[in-house]
Length: 345
Image (tube, rainbow, N blue to C red; front, side):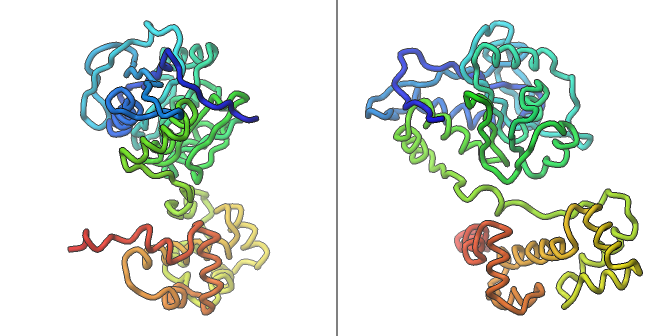
């Protein structure tokens, strides 16, 4: 369904940026500053004129100073009990405790989010802010994204929500009213998307230029770190994984794992896949690519030699596998993630 082109609004859209004790200050204030750029700077809209498409407020359960997870207080400008309607709600990143997200701590916020949704608001989350939004039940069966480091915890907490941590943005709902951004700084993409949606592409480009923001057009796959599942309770497979951690580069690791396990080949492969979610070969390849990523980031070793060191005699195959796994060719990955010369000691 094509979205209509944005047009200048005489009444700016009201944006409710939620402050709660679990919120991370950098995401909350960063979103506020970038979306408020129109009120502070001369940012032209699609027609080249200066207008203010958004009116932002930091909202919460009560007005006044509120300490955030970062240890920095912010001033809640308006209580949610005073807001009958709003156009856009944004939940910033939240910091999860070691025990994970605890439901039912913010019943008033969750009820208010449902009410705003029913009255036409677009609900947005940045990074881990989806933990609060998902509590409304509105994302059940709808695509969402979250920081890849929280993906397992999110799935365990909200199994009804399909989660895609490799995606920068997910936009769901019949009127595109459920919007999520992925890991950490991909809130830049969320804000630029909202500006493009409501103020036009030109305005989004101008804001990106003013703040030196970049779209994560390659997705978040290059940032993902592979960590094999270990809490499956299968001791034989856990032993095989521990062996693989140090021997993934040997010539025939799958065959050697099977021999060491003393299990029948079909039994071993079935149990390994059931326990880890990967076939033995796929698991080996993920470990090899992860080691190659570290070598590309931290050394000047040639790509051909890295291919050999992680277990591949054919550099062309390694290059194809690396790009299929990470979304980037090895050379592009090195350029993206290596420390620049000016930052080296």
